[in-house]
Image (cartoon, rainbow, N blue to C red; front, top):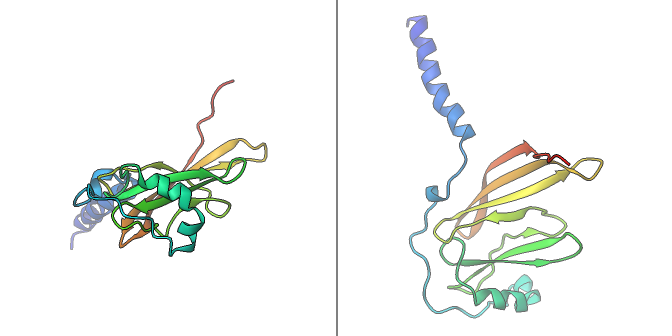
Length: 162
């Protein structure tokens, strides 16, 4: 095969792959079949986490779904700058096994859509002076009642002039 054809063929394969690595997942890429509008289920307190936070989760069930067609995102404080995020299902009353925040998972949920299974989180990383020097954005997709990480992007923090 002609060496120029090999180079051209390699470039045609490499360009879409490189572009795919740089694309940002879009909410429209992960649509839901429908948004739940039926009767709200009772909170399923058989899950110890749901039972522990039952008041906050029952309050969340009074809200409209805001994620993946049937989940309500809820957040509460757990200390000075600590936040916990959970997702409760309006149709089943069950708590999604995955959550964010607390001491172990310091990501903040920054974006959801009722008509999409995509969820976006951000985590700020501090330098030795306790100033944000880096931000990690993660994209998750809800599949079979689990959140699956599909992309991580790390960028320097935007510094503001004082």
